[in-house]
Length: 87
Image 1 (cartoon, helix red, strand yellow):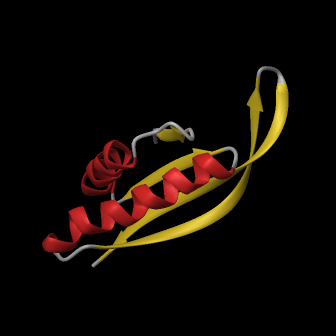
Image 2 (cartoon, helix red, strand yellow):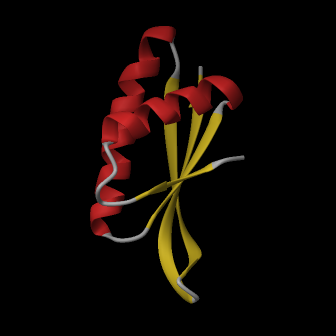
């Protein structure tokens, strides 16, 4: 599965479109965010994506978890958001 990597400069509307596409395709999407700004953009994207799929009767569930990510040879702790659909 493709993991969407979110930064503080990510456009929430674009990320929401990617989430909606992945959820329609495989009923699941996963995002990684490192830092408060990136996590903020990721959460906004989830809220927007809910609006995209709601007319089709799909509800999104977000499961947060910690993730160890290697950035420039250094291990960092980030957040992983797993998005699943439920009907």
